[in-house]
Structure formats: structure tokens, C-alpha cells
Image (spheres, rainbow, N blue to C red):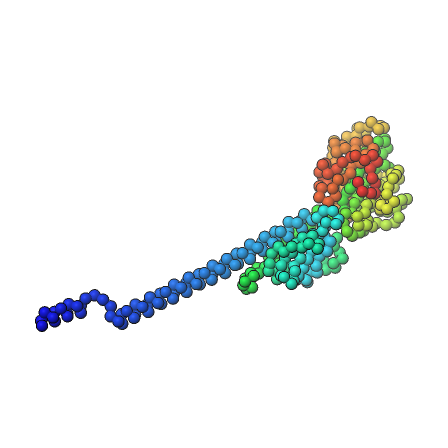
Length: 360
């Protein structure tokens, strides 16, 4: 009996868990598991939220860049939505007059679309807001949608959202300065060195309006070589019709009052410098000889600049190395849309007498 009692005592002191202890351990284990699961779940939600935010932001920045680049390279605006319109659009020219591209917000699908008119494709979505705000040279907002030619900068505002969680949204904006590339009127042809001695009456400059709307040239000026003599453009007293308006796709020719230029297209706008010279003249007179074989010091580059009275519209800096050096030909612009005005490869001198007042 004593032996059995000792054995009982031995077993009762053996390490182990009572039922209560097991229950406590199980409860604590469950609590720890619940806590860990909660932390993992919360971490996953935070990761998913962060991932969603990152994706929306990346898509937004990419879309803004996709809009900004072609608009900065554009050759002019055709139409733009009212700044109060949150499903906005903008249509612009990228080359020839009939090559128009468009950005717009499709209000039905909430997608930002881009492409040629009638063939738009989605870029990104959902987008809940797309606004275009246009400003003139003085920084005033333009609300009259017929005054497209006054636009000098555009602000794009857009709101991009997550397609699964609308609470994830980012509003981005960008400003585009239009600058010279958005001008529609360019210097298109220059007769700077006619093959005669006293050549001022035969010199002329041609302007081309490649836009889709007319331009009033009242107050526009021209200077050559330097701005010490700036001529206000006026209707030619003999050959002009009193108008100062160059139509869409049209041409204007600038000559002296006593011009002897012939062969001008009858539909062209004929303007005058107001005296016997265009600015300080279109060619350098230093070392001038006589007749067809005359020499002129045109290695010194000559500048022709057109302004609207305040802002420069276009300017060409050329020399006799470009061609049309007293041979009866003109410097004719090749590409009025993309070609740079000061790039000699964008000019040729192939036509005898030029094409005053018409397409090169």
C-alpha cells in the first residue's frame, strides 16, 4: 500500500497541463492567431490601397504627358471646350490643314480619348473631369470660343480615379505655353535679290495663313536687318483693295509703294511698307555691283521679322548661301507647318520669278 501511495504521488507531480491550463493556452493561441490575421489583413488592405493609389497616379501622369507633348508640337487650335465644361475637348492641327487631332473626355464611358476626328481611341480611364482653360498673351482667360487665335497658353485639369475604389482619386494639371509654334501666319517666300541694279521696287515678302480662320493684319509691322526702321503694314495704295484681312489658307504679299512686281495672284492680299523700302531693305548693299552679275555682301545674314505690333509672329535669318542670289529666283518655304523658319533646308530657290501670292 505504501508503495502504491508513493507511485500516486509520483504521477501527480509529473509535469503537464490541467484542463484549465489547456483552455487558457487555446484561448491565447486563438487570440494571437486572430491578431496576426488582422494585422496581415490590414497590411494587405494597406498594400492594395497603396498599390491602387500608385497605379492611378502613374496612369494620370502618363496621360497628362500624352496630352502635353502633341499639344506643344501642334500647329494651331481648331476648337476648344468652354472652361466650365468638365467633359472637355480640344481639337488641334498637327500638319496639313485637314489633319486634325482631338483629346476629349467621353462622359458616357469616363475615358480619356485621343485620335483623329471620327476615329478616337481610349487612352485611360476612369477619368471624372477634364477641363481646358485658355489664356491670352496678357494672362486673361478666354471664354469666347470664337477667339481661338488669341490663345497663348492652355491649362489642362484632369481627375483620375481607381476603377474599383472611387475614393482613390488624383487631380492633376499642366500648363502649355503656345509660343511661336502656335502661330498660323508665317513668312513663306522672299524676293530679296532681284537681278537688276535698283532692285527695291522688285523686292517682296509673302505671308501665308495656314490656319482655318482669317487674320486681321491691322497694326502688324515688318522690319529687316534690325529694328531701327519698322514699317507699319497698310493696304497697297495702288494694288490693294483696302483690306487688311488674310483669309484662311490665303496669302499676302508685301511690297514697296512704288513696286514693279508683276504676276501677283489676284486673290492675294496686297500690302505696302508705306515707302520706297521694306524696312531697311531685304539685301545687304555693301559692295553692290551692277546688272545681273552684280555682287552683294549677303554673307552677312539678313533678317526679316513680322510682328503683330507687340509680339513676334515669324522671323527668318538668311544669307546668299541659301540661294536666289541675283538669279531672278526667290527663297520659297518648303514646309510651313513643321519646318523651322531659320533652317536653310526648309527653303529652296527653284522657281524663276517665284510665286507671289500663291502656293510655292
